[in-house]
Length: 151
Length: 151
DNA sequence: GCGAAATGTTAGCCAAGGCTAACAATCTGC
DNA sequence: GCAGATTGTTAGCCTTGGCTAACATTTCGC
Ligand SMILES: [Mn+2]
Ligand SMILES: [Mn+2]
Ligand SMILES: [Mn+2]
Ligand SMILES: [Mn+2]
Image (cartoon, rainbow over all chains, first blue to last red):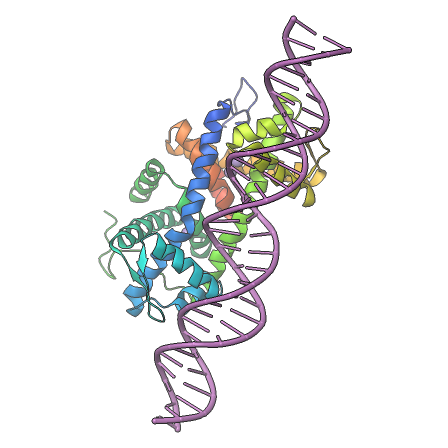
């Protein structure tokens, strides 16, 4: 099964042009640069929904980083127009931040449900989804959603 | 379809403990810190196989970064025992680097074939695989492989 | 075998994203 | 309503991974 009788079975070759490959890596780097903001706004939205407010201390606990790290990251998110922030007050999402959070939660959900549909245990599914979600194209997401719906 | 008649349909809740969630994010950060080394050794192995040697200029072209960026990254890989390197000479993998490259190529292949099996077009599959491969657990990889074999 | 082209290195800059130490503000319990 | 606990901020340090500019070495063409 999935034996390839002709040109050696491995999918290893990769005959794409150097430029095409470079574009792929550039895309991955771009996605990586968005990861942190995506996870933060998603978490902030969830905290606001569940606790009524998003406090830095709760973000720090759930992200597994220290409070100063959260503070600096929040400053960058504010600079980038995703949140608003006042000294010693809890965090609010901007319109843009809310839109991003919604999109991210949607992506996270689909990836998670897809992994669960495949038969993965819930804890591993959550862990893998947390990383994979940022690297799934729109087309792939649609295929994942279709698979979940079908199963 | 995928309507959940009881507790509101979203998979959004996420009732995991803060600590468990923190561990997931810490795992993702750890994976992210390995990404670059993985892509480099995989590419170096492939260049050695295809061209007979791995030259910085070819790495730079395919990674889509400048030559000094490659040089600095190669220095870190050498420091970490994955490659050996002499001034103005091409790059060699250490035993450890070769082992990592093999593992990464294997993972890359399975993720790629899985996405293709799902029905994704080859170019998008390559792009997504390049990012996803670093965030797939052993269990998930097995499920992907099983799906490829079954289809 | 020499000059030009290609390749590689070094220095130095920058932003992101981690951390600890020290301090400031707020909140809570009594 | 105050003391102590909790929470938040600031300053400063570090590594990673990008970049450009300048220079060094190697390779190629003839
Ligand atoms: Mn995530
Ligand atoms: Mn997420
Ligand atoms: Mn990759
Ligand atoms: Mn790869």
